[in-house]
Length: 341
Image 1 (spheres, rainbow, N blue to C red):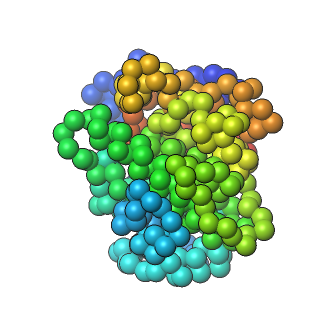
Image 2: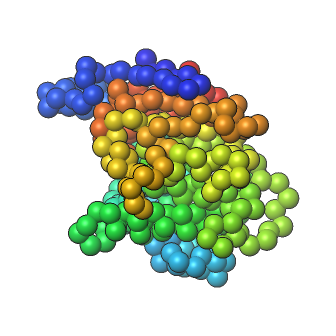
């Protein structure tokens, strides 16, 4: 059983931290029946009363150095539906669909080194898994995948990681802009992996009036910004950024609830302190954060130690391929459950 506590929680789904080849076979077989068959099959049985349920929003063409309101015109939109391949559309159609029928909206932000093609594929897979793991099974929700410029640069991993750290944070501006256009009646949940959480917390910090690298969200006439629900996996951002008066210190003011899944065995985040030289801070996804340090927002946070369930793995596949975890996370993101206990 997946368990969470205020500071530390363990969950064990198989002996040892990493599954053996035979275990992987049985695990995949069980996952097929628990979470469901590939996305296309599930979509064909979907509820036709809700159109345009899967979206891909690409910020790959927008500036990674100087985000601005003018650059939002470079954001591209694609939609998919029951039995329909991806179709490019426009920003007005996107907001007409999202705001016209205020069902739960789940926004996923991927990690580094994900191509545009992989983002498209992953969108349908995640929709399928959320649909099948929800309680009861339903598809009265929409999924948006944010596709940002994360393709591999060069050969050496460290320069690539440094560039993507900056990019993911700058593209938080576009996510913040997107959130500001969503009708307050739409319940929004944000989740992501690795640099995805970095973009998410940057967006929430900007949405609350914060500044990042001299950039601030343009003034808006939005009178109320409803709090969002957040789930962060393998978060590649400094472990103290969410604290009051720190780098993303305003982000928590925009949050209703936040799940932070951390993994002290993560083989990639183990090296995070060396991202910008030796002796840097640990990653949030490696050590978590003490909720008491978050001040008045401490009650919003749940920590989940996932080292027993994902081992040393850093990728999203380790999380989405875990039936026990998805059966808890899906209802949380879809507002069918208030916590993961």
